[in-house]
Length: 205
Ligand SMILES: Nc1nc2c(ncn2[C@@H]2O[C@H](COP(=O)(O)OP(=O)(O)OP(=O)(O)O)[C@@H](O)[C@H]2O)c(=O)[nH]1
Ligand SMILES: [Mg+2]
Image 1 (cartoon, rainbow, N blue to C red):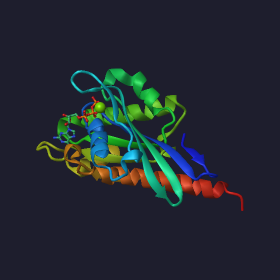
Image 2 (image 1 turned 90 degrees about the horizontal axis):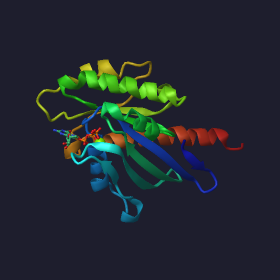
Image 3 (image 1 turned 135 degrees about the horizontal axis):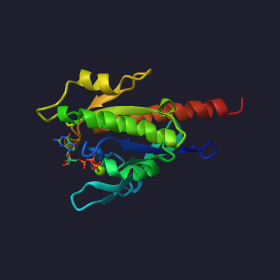
């Protein structure tokens, strides 16, 4: 759950990058860490627990302190889940207390079943935590657009962006940092809108 302190105007939010194995979640965080425009003291360490072949074993974690937005000093905690199917318990743990989600899909044609399975797994895991994707801001990133065998964006939209409310979707080539900040900026904007609006509703008249 986001921690909002109206007195000190501080907001702390947890963002989780979700998606199938090898879709590029960790790469997104590495690019954010390498390229974010923030004072060094506001950029935390990128902590990764990986196997010897660089697959996320537990999670990647990157704390970021943004300069104040609309008067709120905002801290973002960015996590990725391990995409490999066997690590579902870890995915559930990482999702606990999530405020916003970036679902990273692998655009390659032969990854469509894995994308759909991972998106369904996300909804199942949220349910097991008594949460609902309808209530959580999320965006989609169609990654690996640089590869030759990618599905058209319309097809990815048809498969993944077909719920009652259409959500923002971005194409990306995360290893070249393309689409990485567009995606992050949008989810942070959605979160700030949500929490600042909620804060305003709760504020005394
Ligand atoms: N061609 C290409 N390769 C990419 C892109 N994004 C990531 N990769 C590569 O894909 C591989 C897997 O990327 P990761 O970021 O480790 O994937 P992940 O989603 O964290 O995988 P898990 O931790 O196993 O769930 C790495 O070799 C990346 O360099 C991209 O946009 N295009
Ligand atoms: Mg990873």
